[in-house]
Image (cartoon, rainbow, N blue to C red; front, side):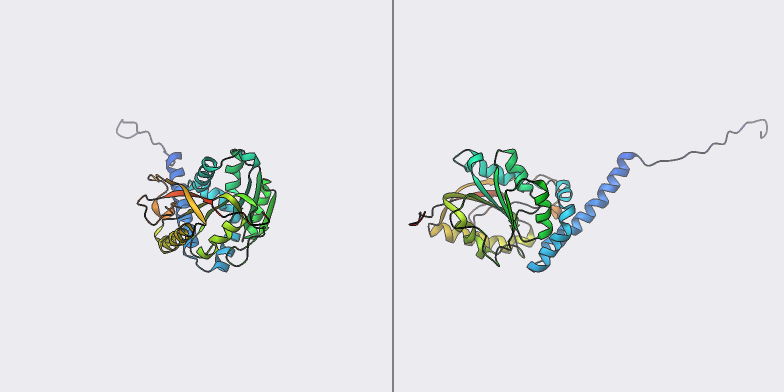
Length: 263
């Protein structure tokens, strides 16, 4: 009591708003992902790149989910539209299969005969745990041939591995070798600044193969990226044609290789 006036003294506790706390945590996580993705794009030595993916394998799925990585879904959408027959009859090779994100999309659309190859044992371990592949093989494309006979697969996909330090452009004909005559090859690459030189070399490689009659382009899909994820974190899909003006797409190509005497 002071001067006949009663003063109430209380203690108040401030607690961060749950939404703000989540935003702060998410911001910290995004900073980590920005560093990790930037590091992966900056590694051009193949041995170092494979070691990096071995270390990333356990967290890879949750990291790319946070970044809304859409390349597997878009590539399989492209394949589904181009494939002439029922999906359950098609024998598919998933090159640089990683943890099996492409296999998840394939199975959801009725593709059941899936084979996969990757150069990272850690990634293959995660892919094997999904139980979606009939066969998984360790193979570093560009240093060794694919472990399959000529003309084996109805479709060959390679999603997310066409960049410096991963699959060289010189290995593209190897994808064509294991595809059946008239089979499909579906590819994606990035338009990130760090990948532009590789993208130009890839476009030139594909153009030379098309001019030689080895395959023909069937479809190319522009990709609307929007504002998320931010540019520093994106895997932008690139137009695989030098003449194109679109910022990104998935491309399916059909093999026009003529059957040999034993096929």
